[in-house]
Image (cartoon, rainbow over all chains, first blue to last red; front, side, top):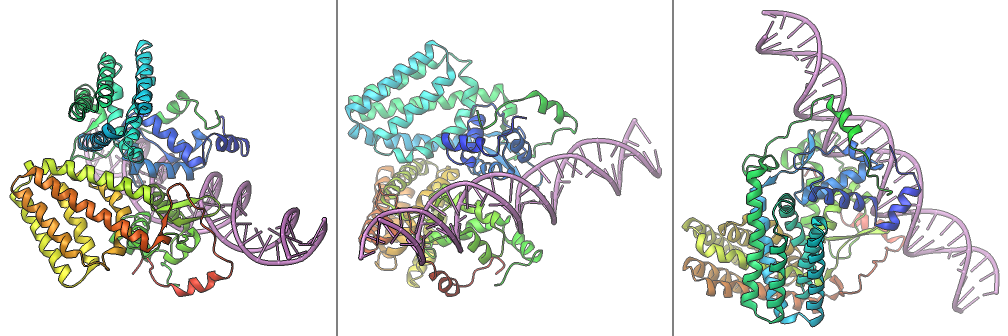
Length: 263
Length: 263
DNA sequence: CGGTGTCGGCTACCATACAAGTACTCCAGC
DNA sequence: GCTGGAGTACTTGTATGGTAGCCGACACCG
């Protein structure tokens, strides 16, 4: 079972991160966004607690936070499920992201320093590396850093968490498309365009380039919806997910294995 | 003590709202935003649970959510405190709010129906009523509804919760200024200007009017900062709040009284 | 008189026990 | 074979117990 030892595990965990709740929260968040937990999957507080070697309390508190972020749906006395991607949520996330990132760009054009531009270019290089190695996981990480760094250059880095939360909804769907399409090169080119225009302090063109970039991402998602309808949920039909059959549980539990907190 | 009876209380609560956690969460949230709980005040899980007649669990879960919203600061093993207003948070909230509301306005100018405009004008009338009766609490409520309705008219009503959360930080400070200044009339006039220009589909002017309105609100906050410095906290000094002296607790507990969940 | 170690009480964190409710399962009756 | 209903195994929600850690008060010592 690989439970966390009463003392050592917690201590090791504390050393790396914060308290158990934060660790579980981040773990589940990355698993959901990375689609290692698919939309619709059941998340039992008890099962998770057992898997991670902690009690129900921090798991439950993490799920409450994830529900607040719209990444899980909690149906009292029924179960907790990774939320299916609602098209309304996608649209709303796109609106939020576009509004905040373009508003930030407006200030970034005036405030960005040479250092900021250099940092962004360094990230572009790293993205090209990821492209060469076809490492989409690394690219996702670097994409996140790029947009975060861009906002920081505007002086509004504090607003990034809001964008990140909206972005999370989009990324779940995007993660399905990127491996298929060969668009990494295109995306990196758009990143470079934004940096170039930012350096030239050309607001109008930079704004247009960023909007084009963000909209491309959105159109990706719409393509995915046709290919994987089971991961989406119609807007006005909140869908009560069905519980698994009784005896399929044992098989599942032995099948997936690993992932305690004291790695 | 007016504790909640084991069965009845919960049942009555369920009837009104949702589960206990949501009730406690909203209760504390409105108390904090309404400054009935002042920045810096200590919030003990035990005390709150006793006051509200529930167990520590829903109280604790509510505090976690409030911490996520930036309304309380949790210092493990030390205490939980209503967060002081950080100037950096104010600036960040203003940026988020302005970006989202103006972006929404852009679409509202195209999409708003006659019905939308009529609803907004009805809210304007109600605001004038509140002004006549000098009812600032009602005005705050109507101001919230006005801006929410404006976003809904743009088709991006789903993004309102994000604005509302940012707005909460601003409102805490604003609530101190409104009673003093006689600006209700000015604010209502700005609301009317926005509606008028929205109705004429004049985006440029409407955008300018809305920005002017939102910035006036911000400048209010800066005035307040000079008058009530104890409610604010310097940016880079996260300030570890001090625990109360030993024997001042009894006095406090008898002093403030009332506010169970089964009112 | 100033610094220091200890002790007591408080805190949030985590673990566990109990309660209320839902959906699946399976068997009885038709 | 089909339908209905009781039983049961799960679910989340709430309550409570126990633990580590921090702070403040205070006696003790230099």
